[in-house]
Structures are given as structure tokens and as C-alpha cells.
Image (cartoon, rainbow, N blue to C red; front, side, top):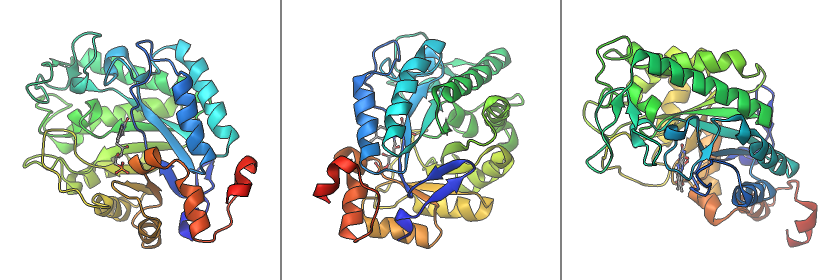
Length: 337
Ligand SMILES: Cc1cc2nc3c(=O)[nH]c(=O)nc-3n(C[C@H](O)[C@H](O)[C@H](O)COP(=O)(O)O)c2cc1C
């Protein structure tokens, strides 16, 4: 079965096609350091046979977090904990990446005012953000670059740049949140400039052999907002800096989303085809036959299971048994499978 076949992106060699997507656990203290929970949580999914684990949204600055309980990577002091986490996960066979994020106007913590391309809040419950100056934009780009250096020092196999779900990069991409009149606003190319400058900066320090994933929201589900068609244009602008696109949707503005199993797969399929780039599909996927369909019909190269892996960390081992596929099992659990 395709699900259990190996897959390589640059030097990243995955033993199967199942990804654990980034999921905030809001379990760090205000320092942003890794603790026992994170090590147990991610290592369990590695024991459970997941091929590629992407650690939750991790703040590149204190007010770039979503909450005061996010993981952080804004200081060298974070490297040691992240290194322990990486070693724990790798010991049981999964490969591991980390999602680098700046929350922008969706920052809900206590370290100062949120920042955004324009002074427009997400909704009335969120604080009004401060519009970034060009100098502040350059400073944030540098923070992404420094975070990438730390991620490499901690031993991560990949990084994922979070340009989805209405966080800072997405706020620049979408015309609904970016009202700037300078070189970072108005046209598609200008709105993609912040993302492109981040990727260029990160590429300067991130090892050539290790992949960079880009997480995007293909749709804002709002008139005048991001569409898959425009996202294809944006990815085509930056794709020389990206190795895989992790295709999600929504989160920029409050909107109704019609949810059903695999509701984002067609976005992944379009991006894969139109941009000629590997993709990860995600969104209400829980069944092995659906994973197999997505992979076999080349609608994505990898499939992420989020909440299903929270409920069922041993999903991969169980499904391999159900389908009579021989996979490597943790020595200690062999008698159970
Ligand atoms: C508890 C939780 C936390 C999440 N945190 C993040 C995150 O840190 N970064 C991100 O890009 N997506 C995040 N997401 C979205 C998931 O990565 C995934 O795209 C979403 O849950 C849909 O997949 P699923 O239906 O398989 O759960 C989160 C989702 C959940 C349920």
C-alpha cells in the first residue's frame, strides 16, 4: 500500500506517508521551554509508527506566540529542550520538523501589543494590532532566520514556515488583512513579498539538504479574500525556496466552513498539479482507505492526521495490522501485533 511506502524529500527519508501535523498543546510555561509533556506526547507518536512529526507552532518572538503557553524558539536557551525532544522522537523511528510562527494580530498573550501588516483586528475580541514599519518587518524576518539556525542546532530534520490560519505571514498574503499601500501591499506579488523575504533569509542559514515545508491556507472562505487560484500564484512566486506545501485553509477571518472528510484535499490536488510541487493533504482524514485514495490518485504526496492521532497515537501500527502489511514494530510491542 502507498500509505506504508517510503518517501524522500531531499535528505529527509520517511518510512511511510503519515504525518502528524503541528498542533498547539498550550503546555509550555511562559518561558517557552519544552517540558515532560512535550517529550511524552511527541515520542508516543513516534513509537506509534508516524513517519513525519511536525512540532506545533513555535514562537519566533515572545509576542509572536499565539498564547503565553506556546513553545518558543526566540532564544538560544530553547535549544537544549528542543534537542532532547528531537532525540527522543528520532530514537523510535519518526523524522521530526518544527513549525516556525509569528502570530501577528492573533497574539493573545501578555507580552505587549500584537503586530500586523495593517491596524485591523481579527474580530472585536482581539486587541487592535499595531501596523508594522518597514524596519520592524526586517527585524521579524531576521527573527525567522535566527529561529531556523536554532532549529538546525536542535537537530530538526525539517522546518515548516507557518503561512496559514491567519497568522502574521497569512495576514500579509490576504487582501482582507493587508491594506498596506507600500511595497508589501496591494498586488499579489507585493503581498507575497514578506513571505519571500523570510524564505530567502531562512534559506541562507538552513542546510541545503534539509527540506522546508510551507503551510498555507488556500481559501479564506470570504468574498474578496484568498482563493486557491491566487494561492497557486503565490506558491509559484516562492516555490524555488520551498520543498513541500502543507495545504490547509481558513483562519484569517471569522467564516463559515463546510466541513466534511477530506474537505481540503482538492486544494492540495490543485496546488500539486498547478505548481508542480509535493504536497501534504490534511483535514478530517481518519480512514486508511481515504489516505490510500489520496496518495494513489496523486492528490498529495503525504497525508496528515491531526485529531485522529491525538485520539489514537498507534493508528499507523493498527492500520498496518488491519491491512496485513508488514512494518517495523517497536521491539517491546511485537507481541501485541
Ligand atoms: C489542538 C489543535 C491545535 C492545532 N495547532 C496548530 C498549529 O500549531 N499549527 C497549525 O498549522 N495548525 C494547527 N492545528 C490544525 C491541524 O494541524 C490540522 O490542520 C487540523 O486539525 C485539521 O486536521 P484534522 O482534521 O486531521 O485534525 C491545530 C489543530 C488542533 C486540533
